[in-house]
Length: 370
Ligand SMILES: Cc1ncc(COP(=O)(O)O)c(C=O)c1O
View 1: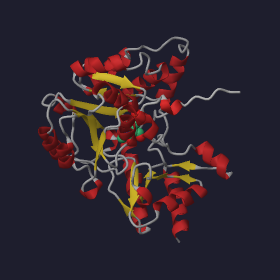
View 2: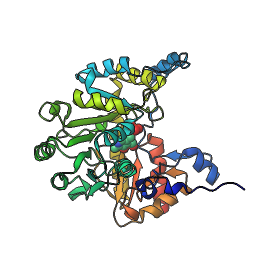
View 3: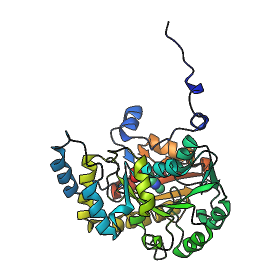
View 4: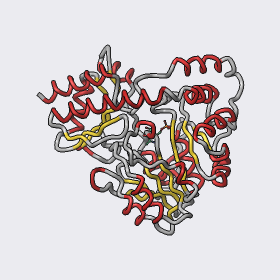
């Protein structure tokens, strides 16, 4: 007789209540389930253009060393990025994706009974990581235009708040808060509350009044800026992101990460991305051109869209978006229904793909809606 054990009794209450992260469906899974030859994935805000040849060459060169552990300090990558951003190397911490840096911040800062403030409809990992560790997230409703209500977020900060996370531009809405709005917010939040600005889509932004936050760290040492190589740099599969913060804080954060949290191939690939920074502008422009096209086409179908500064667009409104996403899936187009983001049936998120992928998505939508 196999022994039984009540594992639930062993786990922290927060873990039992947490819902697992549900990622966009992988292409191979949809092909297998629906018997489709060709599937387009517009569900995880990845860069459809793929890695640069120089990045692939760097990975190939590095591959001969994978019998060795990677550099635990990410020395070469740190020096290279510090020079690129014009920050000191001791302001940088890398993670297995910026996702890990979010997790590190929560683990390092928040004790039981303390809380983290974020927006209700924002990147789900904030709520998930908070709940798994401490069950104490304060989710503030979005304001007008599906943008963060920064005054309400500042007002939600209380004497137990250790961390505020602002996703700018926001996933899943694609909206952004301006430099002036952020200034007002930062003036209202006490210095002992760490403010993490998640700028995963930073390189896609074209709005002139979007905040340039690295310079704000002098006046606001409580700022931590999070960015990633997963989006415009096309390294989502390798997992490398980073945080920029005050060296006194970053030095402590390093203690809480796994020693070898960024693998050898990822470090080499990220350096190659920085060596080829010139490619970013073209990637941003091509995304913007397709984003504008997709948005206009969605609107011509009578769908309501939220203005986006990212590589995705949120469809909102009276349509049954959950059903639309399911119908699109049947036609081999994976988009992201928004139930996990708390937006129910009233919204779905479409990532911007290559022109042919976007055309296929729109053609499928037209067929479904007509
Ligand atoms: C707002 C936001 N932050 C962080 C991440 C995580 O990115 P990474 O791949 O660097 O872990 C994502 C990924 O979708 C995101 O949308």
